Amino acid sequence: MIIKINNGYLHYDKKGQGIPILFIHGYPLSREIWVPQFDNLFDQALLLSLDLRGHGDSFPFEGPYTMDLLAADCKRLLEEINIKQPILVCGLSMGGYVTMAMYRRYPQLFRGMILTSTRAGSDSPEGKADRDVSIQTVLEHGSVHIADSMIQKIVSPATLSLKPELIEMIHGIMAKTSVQGIVGALQGMKDRLDSTELLSQIRCPVLIVHGIDDQLIPIKEAEIMHQHIDNSHLVLIDEAGHLPNLEQPERFNQAIRDFMLSLP
Image 1 (spheres, rainbow, N blue to C red):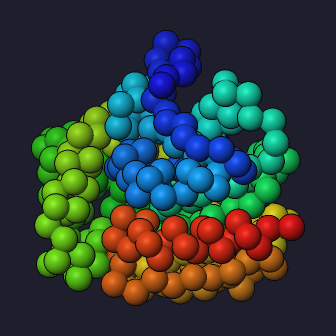
Image 2 (spheres, rainbow, N blue to C red):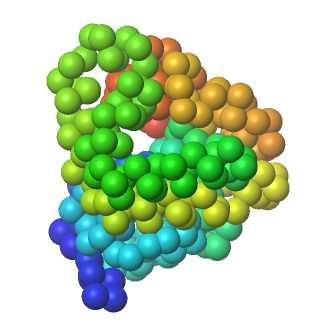
């Protein structure tokens, strides 16, 4: 399904019934990463996912894709399908940055929040420089080169050695991402706001999920968020890296089910 935005479009999926959960993927991925959740949780929730600008099947708009812009796209999706009740928002990595931008702008939309493999802080000077290098790399060598360089780091060593079909799928998703989408996302992440001060202002229940073997965002970032968000619960998943929803879907899905049961 698609929604039109300006001169382009965003693809999204919708399945199930119950409390709405909006899943927001990371960079440079797509809504395809949420298949294990769509296959398992549809009996308890109305599941929604979208391809962010320039990712998956969505139109590669010109960047930068600020986190506020992507948050506004997510709100537009909810309006398009007439979701009026407060929802759960589950963001992974860059999707977590978008989730926090959504809460900053539209706190009334939230019944709860699931922050996965993400951090509240902004990029360090070194991190910003790395974004610039990645932008130049993708412009010169294309999306496949980014996929090749990330695949070793985005999953745990156990996943890398034991799940070749999953590795092939993840690599394919990243390689498919448009160059324009990668550049727009890198620009937006590089200049995103620091959300550390926002953490103490979050009033909805929050589930924080992090893979123990995450090589891209260290566990300490999840622990910092947990310390600063009053109504939060931290779940660490072993034998999982940056994509615990794909690497250990049973444990990830159970964490979401338990979280939904705990909601007031």
